Image (cartoon, each protein chain N blue to C red):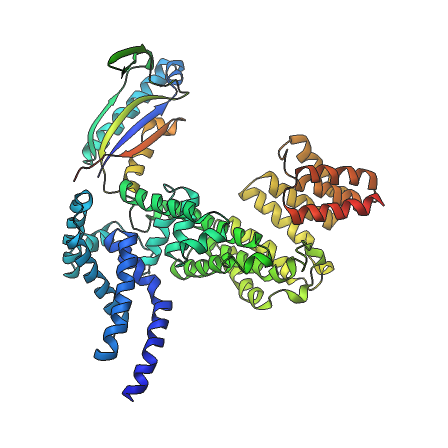
Length: 117
Length: 430
């Protein structure tokens, strides 16, 4: 089964970190990504640029409305994702629990990918 | 001779249903990955037994016959399915079932490789089912409903009445839970050793929730509501039989038995709450107590000692006292101290304060309650002012006790508890 692991965390936390800590955090992510590639779980994954770079698009009554910012202002922002292959939810949860943000106050949402028969 | 056997058969099949259907259902749920289909074919298999056994004779291994028959019927159902939404899944299940029969299917392999039945236990499908129903990814109310439905065989109506919620709400919860299991891929397996302890906590939490709901039911309610305490204890017994190495499972069972033992003495005929110190102890169920006490020892042997074990130990101290004055309050206070170390909480501290007051006098207890008040840890919990009121009353400080009882009344919601507090208030106001 494929799952999307959505990484939510406070952007400010990362910004407020010292350069040395930021480097450690990034290294942890690199190590995690490498490990799930090696174990065959990785299908895709990316970090996202800050919500300050986000644009939200809606089409209403035929009009395209474009606004600055994420679709909703939240205390924790979507910062990245992984698309993984896992045997079941427990395996997906185990993968999610190893994501560095999960250990540093962030939350990982685990969503199964829709399969059309 | 044949005639007599034919008379016995429906009885024996009924007994088989009572004793074995839980296990067969669990196996079917795992094999089919579908609760509803499993239930349907289980019923059909028993119906087939009622039809065929009088003619063909009872099989040597009835459970195997029933399981195989049910699986064959499931295969028929799946083949007949036309809805393409789950056709792909259905075909996969079909292939797996057929391979399973040859002992080589993915289910057989998966359960061998991914499954982690604790050392020395043949994987009982009911154990897998327990962990599936109590999976943390399912909403807690739904965990409770699913457990009662699938492991206890309670009807939707019975569960709804047990929890005093409308049946359609309950039915909706079950549908969502089964849907979540399927859609999110919640597995039918015993968790690995690394997380077994943590996942067992989810299971014991569900069982205790069911028990407490049943415990809150008044005697009048019980005529209309199923006895949830009995169901929780049944599940508790199942749990210890499947996981005899887990000390907390023993602790939970012991705790439930000891609470249950006091039920006959707990509520008066008018529905009023009778305090522990005022209960007619001759009404306590000695069989429950006798069964529970050795289990407490077993639970306390766990390392590290768990919260259910300690709570059971506290209940055991009460159970051993033939009269309230025989109660070893010092033991209880010490045990609450241990509990505070394992699961620190202001409620535990409150209970410890009450025990200390009983052991060392109201003054000592009040000192601990003052700490709780100062910390503001239990702002809207009526039992805190109620405890303070009681200790003040024992010291003869009636005016202060009255004020505290009024404070408690302002916060108390339960009718039986309110009546009790009003009674006490009247006493100190005289």
